Image 1: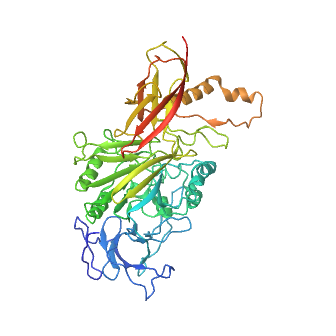
Image 2 (image 1 turned 30 degrees about the vertical axis):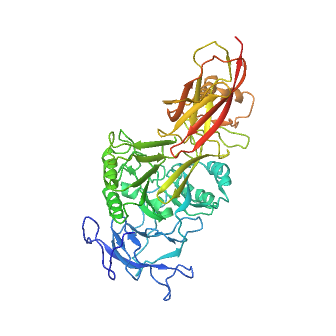
Image 3 (image 1 turned 180 degrees about the horizontal axis):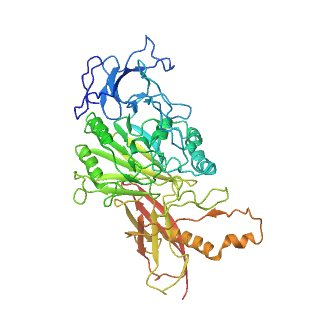
Length: 543
């Protein structure tokens, strides 16, 4: 990190140059090497210099003795940015402990879900322990989108469908949940954390719109319950040469009980991001983590705020942003000529698919877990991101399937030879993007033929949705109740309407084929140059 000289306990003002306000106190203390791992700074334990400390807006660096001071209000979180080569403590749920909550007045009395209890006066010192961590340029993280349980059973789905197959993956450095950790019931934070903690790795969290306290009178207070469990909703941490900046981009309408929100950042959040980026070398990788995705057009994420973020990133060579929220899997590239992005190299925004798929809906399978495919035809699962310095590779892992399950191939099971000019082959390459290339061939008959990228409904998901409409039309529940007890439970819940897929390819293979069974081979090349192959068969009968 760029060196910055700091003498003993000299306050570094933020980039805006504002000084301490009348209602602010000064928090001070040390960031130190906790050699005996008891969380207490002993006389023999040394401070760690040049560690970033923040109050959510201003940033200071610890001096040569590991000391800092920083102004705080009566509703503040003092936190450190986990530096390269060091790790913060984690609690029993493997949640990083890198912050101190200073809220003398606690949370508003009208809250349905508890926030931070009154903390009292500032301690004389607020010290942050760190432990040495062997740094590596090569590591892998795992990313969850929207677990979003609305019941304890849905947490069980997550544990059985996702957590169980990740246990023992010791190559994972840490994990992140990209918001909608729970589905409005904030008491589920604890049981969900207990499930995720079984992976045995540090776990960071992003606030989603279903994680806020709707009884908050202002956006600033809407994250009170989240803060009581996870700490600040806007913060940063560092692994290798990668700077992960987490932002709460859910702007809650400042009306008690309102569920309205819009994607964007408050001025204080922009100030923190701006101040922190001034400390980051321009050739490092900056990864913005948020819940609501950046969009090219429209106001689901305020265009003015998106432009401000792009302005802050314009001088950084390597950037990536990650979101969730939409329950579809999508790679978006912001180009200089058509968006507010200001570099010739497009900005990559990754909207990760969800662990909950379509909100844990659908028919239950043989192990009593819902089918829950996402509306764009992507099976539910999670993402791996592998880093090598400032380079990265993103993979999508389908829950309950082998790692080579990268696509679904859709075509008729059987056709009549020479009966039609149109026989559509559709391929949903789950992790595909505008930078992917797909081709097919009929083995032993045709050469490789490029496929066309289209944006349309996934054919298989359309069939799933149609089935649920048919169930409703015949009123299956009432029919069953004529023969069973009133407490009968249907074997699943309705699937939502389809959404156009951004990773679907199409080709017309025609019907000019000999009778018999043919093998359709599909080859998909991703944005990293890797090639994936899959197969389907087609039965052809004589006319």
